[in-house]
Image (cartoon, rainbow, N blue to C red; front, top):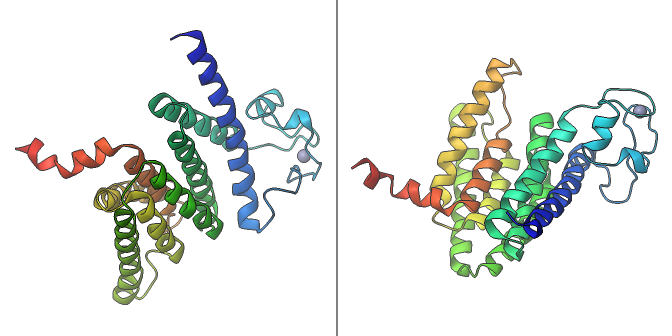
Length: 257
Ligand SMILES: [Zn+2]
């Protein structure tokens, strides 16, 4: 690997860490209904306004040994972990797609999905604001890669129909909520991102990841209801970024023969 590529990776990693910080900030403030752009960051325990030295992704946490610099309250390892996961995905996207508009839009998709994962794991909701961001991002993505508009429309209609059927069907049969309405709205937006063909693989992988989350929830004794958002988010990202995987899904019969 040459020095220029290495410098680019370092640059993309740093940008990823910064966006990772934004993920932690947005996932903390969105469920509280707080503004995510204007209000300065504060320690949630002692309310001290965070200064230059507190705002370095991962480094501030490591240097302060996972504690607030002012009141010594513990700061969860989930924050630097979120920053690192976001940065690692930025680098993976750069290595696969280069520094392009397509990779930038996919990185923004990942940021929105990371916020969705963190919020749903903690609060069991998918904030509406994420749908308002994901929808135009998805349309922009398809304009960039020249997807036929009818494919995007068909994806949207089919995914919305499936989401609504699951929501009302489960309620009708079991007299309780199975798929929340936040999940239904996410289905619609996911349909825009996916187009028509990857929708069935998306449902398949969502189901598999959902079962894994449900089992983990049971093992960790976190209650009978588990968040389905993380499974949906990971399945969507996989199906959007790995057309190979969705093709494999549709051609699996040939491999078995
Ligand atoms: Zn503090």
